[in-house]
Amino acid sequence: MSNLTYRYTGPLPLGSVVAHYCGAAGLTTTKGAPVWRLEGLGAEEGYTLTVYHNDVPVAVFKGALSNEGRLEIGGQLLKLIRTTQGRPALGEWGTLVGVRPTKMFHKLWDIDENSDTPPAAEPSNPDEPGTVINGCDTAVQVLRKRFDVSEPKIELLKAVATLQRPFVAPHETADREVSVYGGIPFCQTHCTYCSFPYGLIQDYRRIPEFLGAFVNDATQLKGLIETYGLQVATVYMGGGTPTSLGDEDFATALAALAKLHRENSEFTVEAGRPDSVTPHKLATMAKLGVNRISINPQSMHDDILKAVGRGHTAAAIKELYAYVRSYTNFAVNMDFIAGLPYQTLSHMEENLDYVCQARPENVTIHTLALKRGSPLYDGVGREAMPEAAAVEEMVARSKERLEAAGYVPYYVYRQQYMTSQTENIGYTLPGYICEYNIRIMEERQSILSVGPGSSSKWMRAPEYRQLQQHMPKDVSVYIDTLSALLEKRSRLCKKFWEG
Ligand code: SF4
Image (cartoon, rainbow, N blue to C red):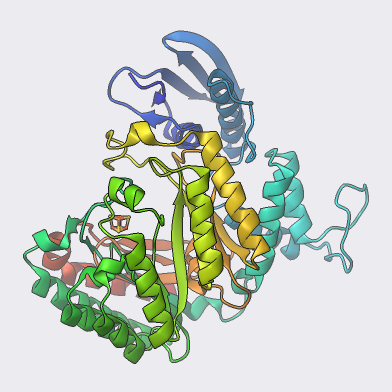
């Protein structure tokens, strides 16, 4: 029996909060006998959560019948689990859980800006009684006092939110600004840490039909964009690995998305794996207006790449990067992961040596998340995963070295089941932020999507996320039900923009 399992029974609203806090403590649900059994009750006088550890009752937490009450119970539960695990009651993130900490930061910032209190003209000291504070300071105070977030994490969130603010602050034309996402649901191999729900491209027999459906999907979306007078701010082609398509198929799919792209605006392609990228595909991208690509080494060590099923080498990354620099003007992002099996701090230092010398415009440092449904979760290489403390050191060292090399953090998010109490950070050289990444993280702009497994979200201030539609992940279901899916998208657009 894993000692990281739990089962919850009780009211759903409390259950979803409990799930977030258990995830933050590294617990996953199980159908077998759980180590942590959590029994929730909701009554007029409030919520009660009874906690059993190895079938022994160890605590009863109570909270009001409200979101506040649920968060209160969640925070207490997190502290209990962590101390039982032999860790300090609170990590650097305090009792703040959830994937998008900066989204909350912006929300607090908005509330203060929309209140009658004028923002301070000068930087203020929020701890001094009677001081007029601005929205950013309000957010800082809440994180510090209500969620016990550590000062370094508060500084990180404040810096990122301040940099993002021009892109997310409510403004008059925001309602008709959209981003477009196109998802290509194939890869050539299955990375062991990925819960990738699709098939391998070499196993899928209906590629021509998939392409036909993808083009129809994009064409219908173009019509909707014209009908409602929408402004496309950014286009992003992701996956899977879009470049796993053959040269001509890739050109067909990209051309369909390029018709939605506004000249000189941001247009990104995930060219994640060097073994999938050809000079032909790069030339196609340049011709169709792409100006940013993502090349994702994850590690610059062949033994680690092999152990996680990546199927490419570090030399292939270097070769592709040199080619892109010589023959294109693309801005380049590189993703790395801290916490891969067999990885040590010196491996991460060597990754950073390479990055600091190559100087891609963007670098993203992820912390490995143990995702249910991934081969790693099921045991492939799990015994070789580094300890949480080692991962935290890798993440901290990455921040230190990237900042010393001139990079600044511009988006940050957390995942459930991360292997340490850290976060994923996107860094940029000044002037090269990826606007799409900010928009997808902060969820303040509508994103209209094309392709299987993609999600469209229609957002409007002040609540944001009013409507959403998720395309089926199964590629064949997507192909076979496309007309109904497109009709639904038309209806949702009409509802959102015509009321
Ligand atoms: S390339 Fe990306 S999407 Fe594909 S299996 Fe690996 S991590 Fe998952």
